[in-house]
Amino acid sequence: MALADSTVPACDAGAGLPVVGPRGETWITAGKDGAIASVTYTGAITEHFLPMVDGASFAGITSGPDGAVWFTTTTRVGRMASDGTVTFFAPPGASSNGFGTLGGITTGPDGDLWFADGLATSSGPVNAVVRMTPSGTMTAFPTGGRPSAITMGPDGRLWVTVARFSKQTSSTSILAVTTSGVMTEFPDPSANASPLVSIVSGPDGALWYDLDADRTGRITTAGVVSHITVPGPQFSNIGGLGAGPTAGSGSRSATAPDTRRSGPSRQRGR
Image (cartoon, rainbow, N blue to C red; front, side, top):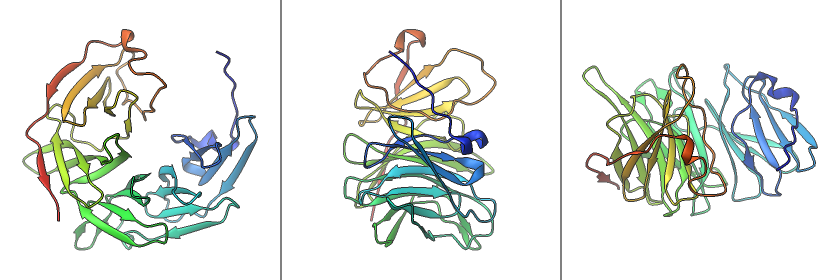
């Protein structure tokens, strides 16, 4: 297999996870420079520099249901049309007191955008999964903790990582959310209580998420949790995840998964 590099100048400031756009091109966020770059399969690069406010950086990016590219910064939701025109939307908590951040964004099976809202207001944190129509109408579904990563699962639900903090306890859970806002919670008792960077739908029909310095988490749509130890230096957290073309690829280089059912699932909704 031949590999080719395409250097994106703006990504000298750090590149985010790539996403395939509506026309087959790859889109990449460049965190510190406020740029989104599109890369064709021939290596042609187009960079779009965006007006970032209050030191905001990118949080997530997805190919939208309307042929545009949608993204989240730490404080706003953005839409980039095919001609490069950018429109920003203020999410719940946008007039915040400077705490918290938006998380990932994905396109749901209902044709709407879904994103994680961990912003804080003067009356408290938003902490919700937000459904947003392409025209900008938003509906928030409280998560009971700070959400960070989100993806659409193979079962038609949205899967979200949530961290909870208190003076007494802290925990991390994975939420499965229907398009009507009904949530089923699967606690991961061995995860560090910190916002998880990414969660993806894997080629094996399960969801995979980054866990800590040397482990990746896997959860089936029934709530069975596995942990796989990743070999290598153990001085920094695992970064984002992406789904490969075949199930189980690379499994020989990792230790056998520590498989267990997560704590009791909890379901709530409106």
